[in-house]
Length: 277
Image (cartoon, rainbow, N blue to C red; front, side, top):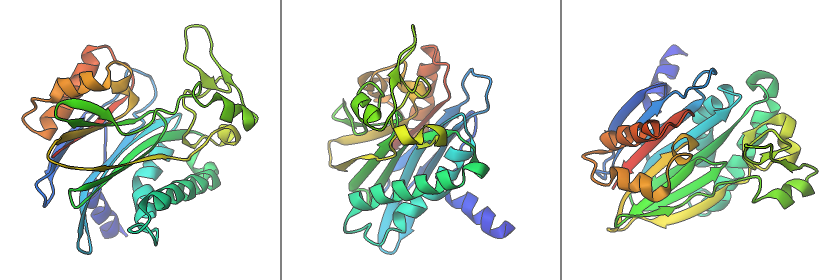
């Protein structure tokens, strides 16, 4: 069992506070990551995956940011299981969007079933699968974000699932959206995202249905940023792209973007992955 766990840790990059790394796939596409714990009193709740993996004749780049709330266990579970569930879908290669939605749903149901073990907290997620350096599949729930840079221009590929935007759906499920003075809108006055994994006590009023984007990586694509809201709370998509567009390599870009968020007084956990084409 120890040998198996060691191999799993080698295959999947495991995130921790103040961590950074860079790696390269066969297609010579590089990636780097950097994480910094926020100013809050709770432990670091961001986890990530960043790896290249050979599946038969295909090279897959697997990248994800999991931003936990009131939980380390749920994002850690996602890190270990979500991509596995996606790639185990029998129709992934022919119906990737349907397969990803199904895998998200299955994973969320399992997390809810394991609430006694994983706790009542939850996690957002943004995942990206790069197939043979050419086709990019992005899925997300919550407010972690994927932003593509094409010819210096930022293009958001994910959807911020804000309670105020999904107020009608939340109300139709029996919930409500409440905004306290000086605060952001929250589901049932508690959670600042309308979609998430876990959160068993709020689940009747939440969704775990991902939004999915498909992008062909052409010569105009320069890099993609995957990051938790510790970055997006303090800068726009274009500001993030402009911050690192002259980066030397992906690892340097990830560290530079994280530092800029800190300079702008971000207090949340910060995690980001840069994939450089």
